[in-house]
Image (cartoon, rainbow, N blue to C red; front, side):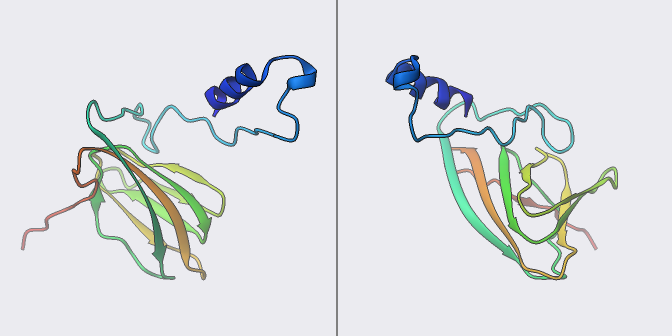
Length: 139
């Protein structure tokens, strides 16, 4: 976001007369780590960006899964609890929160509120690789 503001300012000139009149850029979030404290690492080649909308019903629980690549989400509505399967640590996200998901860490999510959760999810993968791996349970 800062780069965009800088690039726009450079392209339009730095003087007050040319300073992005009618445009306001407000950084909302700056993150360098995932929800579990890992540094954010991007795919090294053939980057694919996929933007999806997720809807999770009240009381619904997502199965234990992990993401091999970076995944980000913006919570539009609802209350999401994400639990790290290895540590048991949970984080609750609500409307307006920006989520940087754990990479290669087993976790689950559930809707702990009365409203549908609506998420905008952004995946960055290598090529057409899947970014969600479900945990295989053994009987």
